[in-house]
Length: 222
Image (cartoon, rainbow, N blue to C red; front, side, top):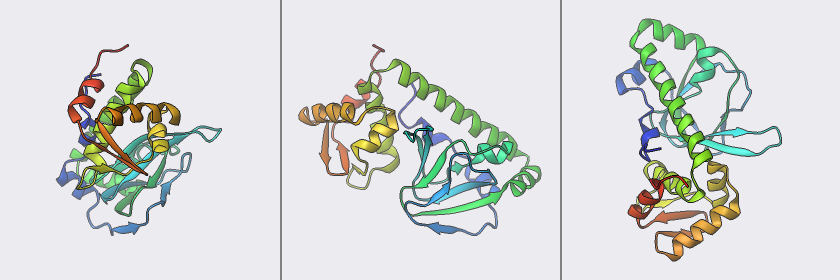
């Protein structure tokens, strides 16, 4: 549970290998709200993010949503299905306008064969994602909502805050990110605003006191 808030940002191919994987691929500009793929779709491509923010979410049969991650610049998206040929494990949606590149599954393996270092690098990406998911499951099972929310806000600060420090995310979206209720998120954020830890406005919030969140996020279980 001692992973840093920004650990997930390290799940990247090094720049040279990212370039080798997507060499010669045309860039595609897509609008906010565009679905790259849906959960349980056939997996035929792996995407690379040039710029923009992509939400990775899992849906239950009843339609409940859990945001598994947010991917940004130089991230890979959809590599699991592209590697094993199985169905998509999640839905990938553009939260902002985004510029993407992609290769087909066949191209992926051709480029891995041409650049053997890509194979070990892709294994590294998969292992890092598995460690992230395992840690997230541990957090959900063992940490109180305050600690989980503190860690997630610190991560979002590194990923998507604007130049003035505001994070464009609603309380409902935060609840989806944590697998929590909106009511529990609202209560915690209201308490933190009263204590001067955060500021809140419609559709967003700003972390004012990072040190308090860091302390809450690293607090002992229970």
